[in-house]
Image 1 (tube, rainbow, N blue to C red):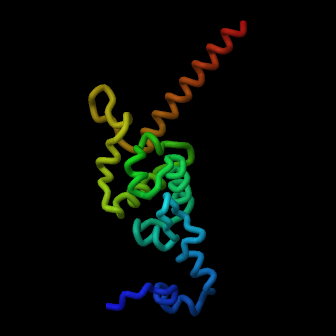
Image 2: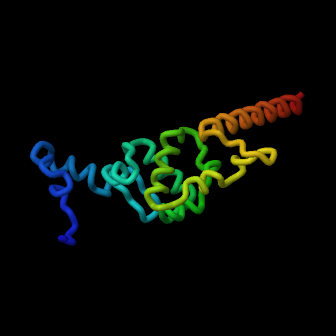
Image 3: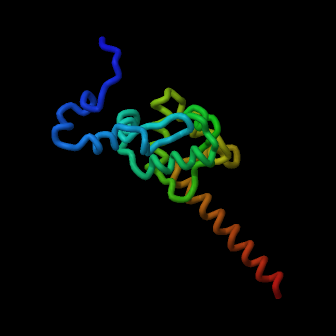
Length: 158
């Protein structure tokens, strides 16, 4: 086997005949990688190849979450995070699925990761049905806290 690094032409075959090298570089290069987690940079093609999912806004949101967690690599992000720490605004099920597939592609146990954090058990029972249901529950709790706080502030002013 030839141990040389494949070129863009090798990776895309005859596609280079139909599109410019700049377009190929955009999708295969890591200069504008949609997924950046510390030292790990995945191009559009890498994300698709490793996860089987289309890269896009979800990959950029995963990158932003990794930056917020100060992760130095995918493995480090796995160890620093939990589903409750990634349940932020605009990060939905597509992003969550992409994150799980990224962890799987690195050989990490996604079930063990998904069970981390306070979201999994409530009243001593497994209570986590889906990432979306968890986000809804947290949003309701946050809204109730905000309403309660606003009512207290209003009463203090009188």
